[in-house]
Structures are given as structure tokens and as C-alpha cells.
Image 1 (spheres, helix red, strand yellow):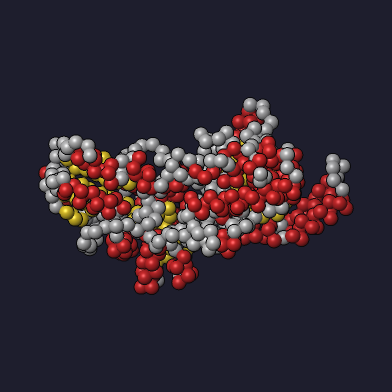
Image 2 (tube, rainbow, N blue to C red):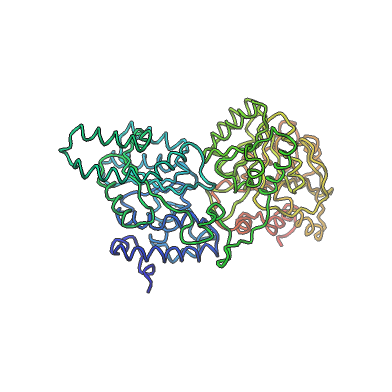
Length: 615
């Protein structure tokens, strides 16, 4: 029996020797690689925290102590050793365990996480509640160096300075967020990371001066002065977090020692662990950005079956546009690779601004770039767009700046589950004055929409999924605010857009077999809606709206609002949308089937509207 098979709870970790923990780490790595190659998931980040996770469970008593993972995409080891090893083969599958911490999944998942920058704020809440109730447990937050630059972390540190509740911050420093880290904080961490002279000198100084309560004020000042010489700015100490020191994040013995020191501290402190993203898998070590989140892959060569999708197509079009107009610039919030900007960065390195995991900064910076006469395109995942609502409203829309949002991963997003669904952007953006929202259904439409936004004067959003999709209808040029009538009929009208158009096209063929001949409209613009075509819809008794976003605030809402405002009566708007509830992890196809947004589900519902029996 392997060591891993003997670990059924964290208590089993505490009974192992350091040598056994090292063997267990190797077994866990292989176990994760085998599972992720079948299921897909966050590979590189989890390979990098194996020893760190084992050391945390060796020193602390979770779940009595509280462990909060920032983002949570690096929680696989945590799940494996907290009683979910046998379920790990169901990772990210329908009905299986989530790829992120979920409180309803295990008592060891202290806080639901999925987005960056929340761990320290959550930790301050746990610590405040602990002290309020007179309890004594520890609160530990594991935060990556890429996530640390996010503004919420500094809001949390500010709160810690006010309330004085102790937390332990484990800085997981791998020089990466998703793309390689950038900016002043990354530079500061690099200086800390590489300054081995400080650690060596500090140890020698402590031995010479002695420790304990008898140390004089002079001794403390001398040590602080030495620290200032080696670590410019005393970054963490000046923020009120005692910086315990740097350690090798893959040396279990050293990790155990420094975490024990942190546990003994009376005040909030930082443990700085240097880890390697992708450790133990050659392909992931060589390209941790590519292996941050992966589809199922070949174990022998690490290759995946993913094809070129809309992300890369958008990046290609920006390259063509930038070659024609030197005002074109791209902005990213730590997602150069994921949003298809790698080629753009290679060809136009001076035209890319990657601000790290700071979407608010990216949005407002984009607005100022536009005010300065440039043409900024902010490429961002739909789920992360939510993090900068205020900046889009205030600085882009109300300020009437020509910023284009390239909204990637729009719609149902499958295995990453409820925290990563791209189903809220339409409702979010339709509420904003001056925002134009487009949804391409083909590569040609995407290219033309990008150019239309470039030539425009206001705020634009172009939403699309990761993958390209099927659309059999002839292309007609994209015109501002205009829809495309792709098939004329007489029974009912179907209005859809983007990824759902290709799916609906297949349904149209089956409807014809049942002698149902709808009018099908490709609603390229979700705001403004095409008023001319919308008025024509009143000739139909039933209008079906098929959309891959939540019903509240979507296109169906827009049509009903238009009919109400224009005293149009007798038209039934049928919403085929995502319901107002969290959508759990599963494949996109399984999610569509569950929501009756798949081919059969939509066909059945349309036939029900037409008065036919269910098929």
C-alpha cells in the first residue's frame, strides 16, 4: 500500500516523518498528473504547492484552525489529504468535487473562493470573529505573489492595522499569477526572493547579539537597520506584518520550522515561501503559463487537443489593426496568454500594458489611454470583468471614452463551476449608459466588430466564448445596431446570438422536419437592440429568445421592455436563458442539457410552444 493510500485525513499526515512526507509529496504529484490529464484542470499551480500544503497540515490543526486559499485554484493537494482522495477522479465533473474550495463540500474548505484577492479580507473576518468569541485558533491565508498586488489585499492590511487581529500570511511566491508577474510588487518580491545575503547575515547577527527579552533597544535598532540595508523599504514590516523570512517552498523540513515560528508569534506575520509552478512535470516546469489551466492532455508529450478559438482570433485581428494604426494598444489584467494576446505582445511589445491581477486598474487605465488619444482594447474574461463594475461605469461609460472590452470566456464555462461562469456580463453592461454590446457568431463577425469598435467614439463590449463554433449562414457585413435575419418564416420568431446561433441552426433543420418554419434572427447587437427588426416581431404571437446568460437583464428583458414602452401587446416572449441560480461544474454540454439549453431541450420547448406533444 502506498503512503497516499494510507492518508485518509489530516491526522494521518501528522504521524509521518519528514522523509515519509517527501515520499508522499512525490506520490501526490503523480496522482494529480494522472487525474488532470484525464479531466483537465489547474495543473502547474497545484504541482507547486505540494510540500507547502503538507507542511501546513503538519503544523496546524485544520479545520479548527482556518485555512483560506486565495483564488483557490491551488487547493487540489488540500482536497486530496482531507478525505477526498477517492473522489478525486470526479474532479470538475458533473456531480463530482469542485476544482475550488466549496464550504458545502467539506468542513476543511473554510471559505468559497474562485477569484483572486479575497483571502486576506476573509482572513481578517475569521480572525475578528475568533477574537470576538474569545477563541484561540489560528487563521492562515495562502496568497500568491501575483494575487498580492490586488487592491483588496491592502484594504485588508489596513483593517489589520486598525483591529490588530492576528493572521498568518503565507506568501506563495512562484513569480507567476497566470501570466508571468509584472509591476512594482513583482520587482519587490524578486529582491526579497534573491537576497540570500540578508538571511545569512541575519542568522549570524542573531547568534552574535543573542535573542530573548533581554535584548536591548540598541540590539533591536541595529537589527532593523541591517534589515533596511538588505531589504529596501522593509516592505511588509512597514505595512504592519512581521516578516519572518524566506524559505524554500519545496523543503518540507524548513517549511515546518518556519510555520511553527509563525504559529508562536503574537501578531500578524508573513511567511515567504519560494515555490516553482509546475514542479515535477517537465512540460509544466518549462511552460507554467500554458499549463496553468489545461484541457485533458497526453502524458507523454503534454500536448492537448484544444483548437484555435476566438481568443486567438481576437489577438490576430488586433495585430492586423495595430499594424495599420499606431494608436492601438492592448491592456491585460494578468491574462496575456489566456486572452490571446501572446502574439500581439511579441509583435508590438511597446503597445501592451499588463497590470497584473488588477482589473480595476486595467479599466481606469484604459479610460485614460483613450482620453489621451489612443485606442485601448481591454481583454478580460467575463467572470473577471465583474471585478471592475464601478470603473467601467464611472471611468469608461459616464466619461464617454472609446474603450473596447474584449470579453473572453462568455457564456457557460463548464468545469470551473459557479465562480467562473461567464453569464453575468450582459446584465452587468446593459445597465450602463453609452455602452454598446456585440456578440459575434463567426470569425468574420468578430473581425468586423473589432474594427467597428476601433472606428467608434464610445464604449464597446464584444463578448465571445473561448472556442469557435459552427454557423452555416451566409455572412453579411456588420452594421452598427443592426441584426441579421438569417432565415425568414411565419410560425414563430427565434432571436439568438453568438455561440447559441450555431446550436439553433441545427434545431432549425429539425423544426422543418416537423413542419415548423420560424424566422431566425442573429442579434449581433445586444445594446442597442435593432428597433426596426424588434418592431417587426409584433407580427408573431410567440418570440423565443435563446441566450447563454442569465435571464435577468438579458436580451429577453430588452425585448419585453421595448414592447412595453411602445404599447405592443399580444406577443409572448419566451426566455430560453440561464436560470437565476449558481451553475455547478460540469462540461458545457452537460450544463446545457441540465438547463434544457441543449439541442434536444430547446427543440422540445419550441414544440411545446407550437402546441405539439413532447418528443
